[in-house]
Image 1 (cartoon, rainbow over the protein chains, first blue to last red):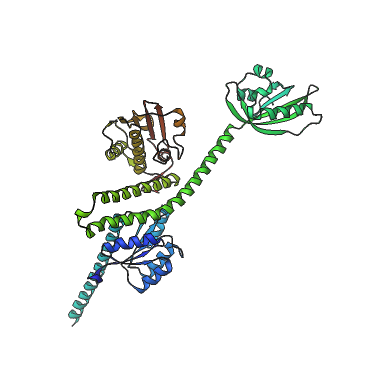
Image 2: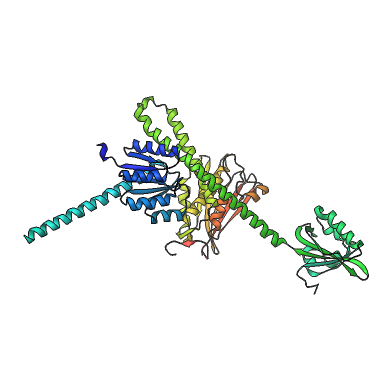
Length: 150
Length: 352
């Protein structure tokens, strides 16, 4: 059962936010892991699959946008939500263009964040289902073709 | 030539003015005849009076032609108004006797521009500070919010509901409300300092008035009345306008602690749509009225004094204006005027 829990990586340099976020996500039956800087985030996301990552836009060792692009290249299927304390339209547009799946402003209501996470995980499930269906469809077609050829 | 000069020109001998040109007459408001008999020093403000007078006397006494000397002073007009001027004086020979040639340049416009740019600089500094403080406060607020959310959910799990005191639940609610309030302060600071252009779309102002008032919880002793006239749709940023209305209505209600009536009315005037918020509250002094739109000015114990400056900023970004009328102990009326046609400022949503 525990294996099916979606896993979330929290990348945030503020210890209190990191710990409290992790706590409420675990309360909602998610598996969580945390990273306090970009380097740790890249290591962890490469070592293990995460369904979703929450990324702070300002990190001590690298710009959140840099981390975002790298993660987008390495783990395209992982959902990425940017969190920032600097609300601006430019920031938002940049983040979305660089491959973020959503963008939210700090402080965010936990209810809102949880709803957004739920929504993005559902999108991911749907996308996977689509891929599965496509593969099944492709196999079926191939099998029919082979049967026909025989 | 001197007569038609763009600056005021005067010649003074033994402290009396012997010549004054047209522009000087305009600046000081005295007729030429009055000026001719006036001791020059009567025009000087008290702060610079002594110094300028001394320089005058020195120039008149001195043998050599001194280089022109300039001061920024204020001249006192006939109606006791103070006009900032640049006064340049130099010694010239006039009919064989030494005289002082004074050139008086009206620098009201320059002063106004200087003040304006100083104000803008001040606002930019506030903006930078606000962004900094705002960002630093966002993190602790986020942690508090997360922790409260967790406790709210967790308490019923670890304790049967009968054992959770009502007080504890109330206290969690207090934390929640306080975080929301702190959040609002940060947002206000950000709104005030950010240069956001309105996103214009066709808007029914009456609908926004109704929507705003439906969200307001007025105390029992306050009566809300609306008087809405038919209005044409105008292009406006709905969120911004709603913020303005919400703010003005809340201010009105808060000015009526002992109860009263808040009347919100709309009407169409030439080129404008007008919305006024008229309360029967405490009103305010002329002095307070002047400072009303200055950031961080407030008469309330709670509140930062950002509400009205934000309103003004939002309305002006629509090329509109806010007017205030107030009588102490009678009440205050705020009127928002929004142009029916937008010429500039703001982007129309949908096309770039």
